[in-house]
Every structure is written in C-alpha cells, then in structure tokens.
Length: 499
Image (cartoon, rainbow, N blue to C red):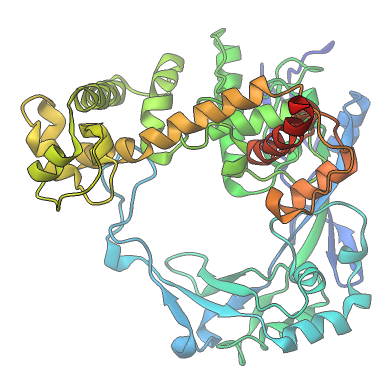
C-alpha cells in the first residue's frame, strides 16, 4: 500500500495482512540447483524456488545480486566402518548456550560422538578428472570463501589432505553429514568419491550434494534494525542480506523479529553496536559496506573482540533484552547481581597491591627476581594461580556470590583478559590517531611480515589504498590487518621525519 508493507500474497493468491513482514528467503530467492551438468529451479533439493518474490523485489527497485553455496552428500551411517576412525566426543559436561540455564537437557553420556576421516589422493584424482562435468564450479557467481567445495579445495590446495567430519544429523537418525566435502559433481561420481575416504569404502550415499545459486539484496538498502529503507514494515534476515552460516542467519533473525514486533507495538527498536556484540559487527559491516561474497562472521572483524566473549554476553546484552521485553525480570535481576559482583571483585582485587615477593610468599609460590608491585587482579591473571586460592583470601569482601564456582571462574577469566583488553583499547586509539598516515606506494601485501590473510591481500591489492584511513574503509578489511598496515606506515615514516 503506497510504499508501506501491509502483508503477503501466497502462491494461491491468498492474502495475509500484517503491519510488518520479515523475509528470510535463504537460498530460495530465484534459487537454481546444480548437480554435475544438470540444473533446475529449486531453493533446496525437492523444494520450489521463490521466483515471484524475486520479481516483486525487482519491481520495488531493490538492487539484487547473485551468490552461490553448496552442501555435501548425505551418507548412511550404518554403512560406515568407524573402527579405524578417530572418535571426537562431545563436551563433558555439555555447556548451555543461554545464561538462563545452568545445564542442558541431555546427559553427557547420551550425546552422540563425531568421527574424523579425510580426503585421499584418489579423491583429488576423481575431482580433477571430472571437473568438465561440474557446471557449478565453472559459474562466475561468487561462493563462500571460507566454506569452499571439495572441488575448490583440490584446485586451490593441490596435494593437501583435508579433514572430513562425519556428523550425525540427530540423536535418532542414521543420516550422516560429511562436513568438509561440499560437492556439486554428478551423483555417480560423488558415490565413488565418498568411498575413497577411510572408513567409507562401502558407504551408501542417501542423496548427493549439490550447489545452489540464489538472489540476495544489497544489504546497504537495509537499516541497522534490518528494516528496509525503501519499504517501511519490510524486514530482511539471513542469506537474503548476503550472509552465509547458521549463526549469522539466526542472529539477524532475532534482531529482525524483535524489531518487527517493536514497530507494531510502537516501541523503540533494538540495535546492537560493534562495541556490544558480534551481531552489531555483522549488521554494521553489511549495512555500511555491503558484501560482494557470502559474508561470514569472524572474531577478526571486530575491533573489541577480546571484550566480546561468550562468558560475558549477559553483562553486555541482558539489559538491552530486558528493556525491549525479551528478558524476564528474574533473568535480568540475576544478570545484574552477577554484573555488580564482578565489577566489585575487579575493583577490590585491583586495590589490593603488594610486592611480588610478598604475593608469592602468601600464595605458596617460589621466590622470583621480579621486584615490582602487582595488584591481586594482576596476580590472578597469571596461569599459576587458581581463582579459588585468590577468592578465598578475600572471601568476606567479595560478597554472597564469592562461593559460587561460576562466579570464581568468571573472576579468573576477567583477570586473564584485563591486560589484553587494555592493550586492545590502546591499539584502537592508535588506529584512530593514525588514519592519515600514508602507505608506501610500492607496498607488497604478500610480505610475510604483514601476516595478512589471502582475503586481506586480495582486497587491499585490488584497492591499493594510499592511507591507513582509506584502507579502513575497504569492505571486509579487518582491524588486525589495519594494525599491520599502521605499523608499516609508522616504520616507513621514521626515516623521513628524522631527516
């Protein structure tokens, strides 16, 4: 209605009215499946693509692009010989994802293990001998850099052995997901290929792997709330925004869903900044810079990665969740108690300063030549000192949570990271102050001293930025890479300034 989204029209022309709509099209948006030289419209094997929706988005003048991804064949676990394979057990005890839970629903002994196998020279030969039958690999559409197909691995890393994780798809199924051999070769070649791996010489393939090409929307057309700029009330999440990966999709889904509800309820939207979480880094990267390839979240993309840890997510984000209505009063109060107790513990332990020799005597450690003074927090950051030892010394000062093993562990973690977090803050300040520094015209991005990833080399070589600031504005260039460039720029500047 006008420029506003008021609902959806289904394939059978049924209309569902809604004040907001969240689109999570995955690989279905004008999806096309490739297996060998065969190609046909589909969003997933056996499911129709969303072609009409792609046409609607084009009519609304959204800028669309094309990406591709792939999936491995599925194997029958009953036909795998696990006896010769390395067993990889699950966590014991299993850790819950949420701070709302103290344990997960499954007992450690009831979890299912994974097994590790690998590719062989026979796998490489099969791939190379059959590339002429692989349409997907020949396509110019960009695929995921960090989850390449087995064909791409063999072409890029000749002669390498690649790990393949045999992952059960569930507790009550015999279907195995061989993680590491995403494949788009003809089905009969895939059957031969999987039988070249140790433990899989007699394996039966349940269904072949395949490649899928799909449309995505340039995410620069989306706000940080994941609402589109062109159409109020229309939100986008997941692969439609150019990402790849389950966690990347889930993080956008929760933000888009919350903000769609906030819009309907006329509440302030939820936004997460780069300082507050990886969700904020991901959304900021996408909405500010866009992407030319399937975007995956890495810690190296975050300036404050040492502060964005799973152990402190409650401290960083619970208050936001509570204010928006997604966290209960009880959960919020529990998080506040922990946050305040941790802050008090750090303050108390920072204030306790003694000579290093005195500390070592108190803690029963051998003497050292170190003549400095250190705080209790700095001492706790050492590998040799347990949280129990230090917390027990200040039990009465640290309050009611001091006896909790969870609290003690978290105090230890904070102590371990305190120096590193402070150093990272200094590095960020250094980057901000060094934005105008000139980069050498003849800079060699392959220089081992720069320690750049292949992705960084490619992006920087293509853009050839003249300053550190210009490099920082190249989509996908990480803070780690920028620090390397900054150090180089400073090094090159010294002789000229000395003159």
